[in-house]
Image 1 (cartoon, rainbow, N blue to C red):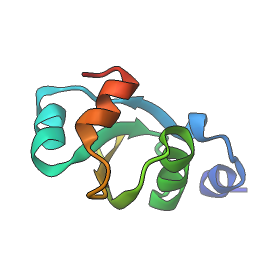
Image 2 (cartoon, helix red, strand yellow; image 1 turned 90 degrees about the vertical axis):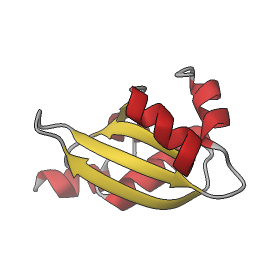
Image 3 (cartoon, rainbow, N blue to C red; image 1 turned 180 degrees about the horizontal axis):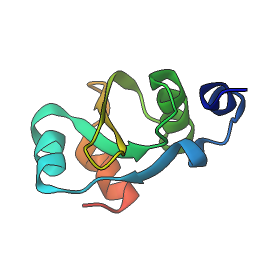
Image 4 (tube, rainbow, N blue to C red; image 1 turned 60 degrees about the horizontal axis):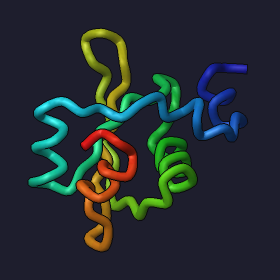
Length: 96
């Protein structure tokens, strides 16, 4: 079984979402574009990330972009729906 299939079978959202990012760029994206930034499991798909975030934080997500950093980490940029503000969620998580 490949690692990607193992992630799909693994339903624990806390293993997919590692931690939120609270850099200056991440805060700027929260304020300007209503986006949150998370470091996630490298083998996870966008659908895995979406389901995990919806389960953990009860978010309404409109778009997900992912990038592999030069350190080998997978970073997910989560654009929230208009009803949900990223700053409110960041305050609940404790990164603001």
